[in-house]
Image (cartoon, one colour):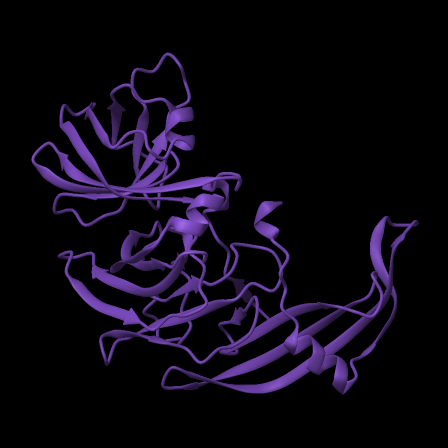
Length: 336
């Protein structure tokens, strides 16, 4: 079967996670209003009436008078512009949350840049975890579809991590807000990479390809969880699919989706693979049609071919299936 995996295309752009300062700036580039969304020195922004997300890429060459190159967010093929921020120090910007409340500079095209900070949040910081508190902050996402771009709505309570509580969806044609999704729970905020799109995503098989998924816990690694949304052309709005599971793969020929969950076995070198198959039944709904569970025992490295193999495999017992469904994977694969 032909599977298309939901792969985050932004992993190479994501800095190593030991700290992260999220900032939002608003202001002007030339005569155009602009809004910039920073994760350390990585940024995505909107400016003027173009309604296309642009990427600010840091220039590390010391002999270049400009700090950043500008690309469209979905392409690095063509440099659109260059920007210099006056007195910009990458190390200070990435570690001192109180620095750079204002950004001034100019572009290669000759436009003056004047920005002021309206929001900041330092993730992976004990003081911020204890004391920071905010509600309903809109944060632009890197990925967009052919017709829409997205902002996640972020809130945080004291002594809790920042979480996504909603999504705002905008038209690329005129920049108007066309839908707000609320009531999202259990979704950790990861900056500009929480929403993932791809030109091949078509979860309701209608040929529209404006569909996306919302990362709930981690970018990559096994047992990822996400919410899947499709654009319903009849309703002219996005609808959440009734898919519950892990690390879904979609079969576009069979119109099926499969959830893959890995769980530990009784011993350290045992593991369980639990799969659930769902069939698309129309009207933006899926139905579970099959469950398989395989217990892999006595994992070892085969000295003949240097591959990791299991000496025994069998069907899972009912209590093992039940335990695997309840298993919560707390490993932080994003730190690797």
